[in-house]
Length: 198
Image (cartoon, rainbow, N blue to C red; front, side):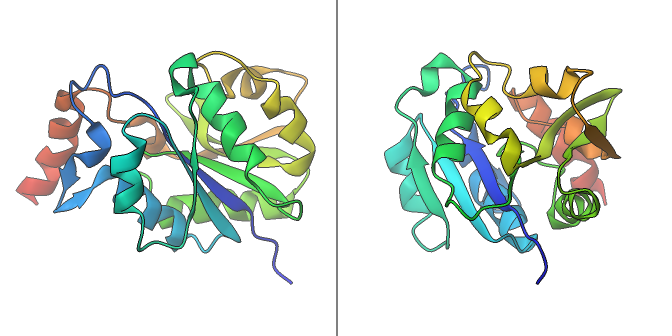
C-alpha cells in the first residue's frame, strides 16, 4: 500500500495587505482558493482539509462541490499558527503525515507537491520542506510524530521555527516557485504578466 499524506490547505488569513479578499481573486477565471484546492487534490492525497477564517461563509460556499473537509478557525486573527493547529486537529487518527500548503502559493501545483510526497515517502520520519530563496518553508510535509509540536505553535510564523531548528531532521526539496505567494495586488500582477505574454 502506498503511503499518502493528508493535505492541509491554509486559507484563513484576512488579506490585509491585499486590500480585498485575495482568495477570491482570479487567475484564468479560477479563484486562488480553488486553484490551491485543485493543486492539493491533484497530488492524490489521502484526504484534504481546508482551513478557513476570514470570510469563511463566502469561501465555504465556493468549496461545496469539492471533496474536502472544511474547518473554520475562529481564532484566525491570532496568526498563522492557530490555523495550522486547527488543520492538524481535523486530521483523522490514521493520517501518517500532513502536507501543509498555503492557499496563496500560486506557483505550486500537483507536480511540486508530488515531489515533496516522494521525498517524504523515502524517509517517512523526516520533515520534508520546500527550499526556495535559501530558506526552508511551505509547502512542507510533517510526519505524525511532529503533530504534537505543531499543536504547540503560536503566533504568525507558522512552522518556520520548527524548520529552522538544527536539531530537526529536515529534508529540503528545491522548489523555487514556493517563494512566490500573493500578499499584495502587485504580486498577482507579477505572476500574471509572463502568463499573459506566453
